[in-house]
Amino acid sequence: NAGVMQNPRHLVRRRGQEARLRCSPMKGHSHVYWYRQLPEEGLKFMVYLQKENIIDESGMPKERFSAEFPKEGPSILRIQQVVRGDSAAYFCASSPVFDWSTDTQYFGPGTRLTVL
Amino acid sequence: AQRVTQPEKLLSVFKGAPVELKCNYSYSGSPELFWYVQYSRQRLQLLLRHISRESIKGFTADLNKGETSFHLKKPFAQEEDSAMYYCALSGTNRGSEKLVFGKGTKLTVNP
Image (tube, rainbow over all chains, first blue to last red; front, side):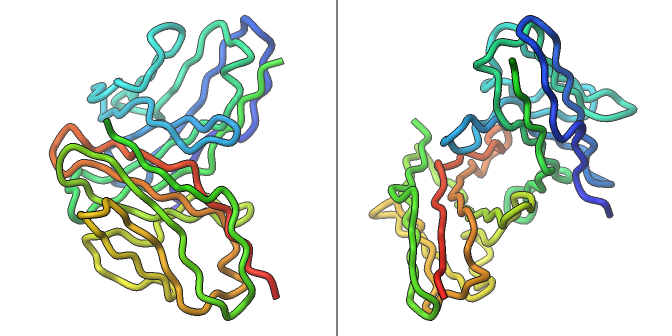
């Protein structure tokens, strides 16, 4: 099992461009979580998705950010019209069907977004 | 409000010395507590969690509900323990699966 995959690992965008971050969960996992880590900060929850459903988006900024997890293919975090404040490391995690007492979230290596 | 506080940004100890990484939390309800570790150039990985009651790599953590703490301890630190450590919590009900992280403590174990 290759683990959670994220690509690209590094992404550079100019202000106003779009950023697309991809996450392939571990085999057999149907739950995906996105977290953002700003410099000198801990990871902050953004969104929790299951296949074709957004379960919890309480951490997503109201504008410019969107996420999806289609029936086929990876989960995508999209940031439109990026600004310098979007520069951060974005981590994806996946878990099996959730049972809080046994399951845990497995993290990908992250995508480091730099906005020039 | 849900919050995890790790008061020490940096912690430096000598090999063989005891180490304690502090974690305090605020949560309305009964959370599950975790310690995640990130070694240099590796991804974030689970070290241990409260419900498992396990000792992993010599580390233990005890949940103190009165003090709302979940400090991570190891009696004899090793150089390979040098890493970034994050304390986190989640809920135990459906709909509360998201992890809330502290800002992390960078542990350096000197030879």
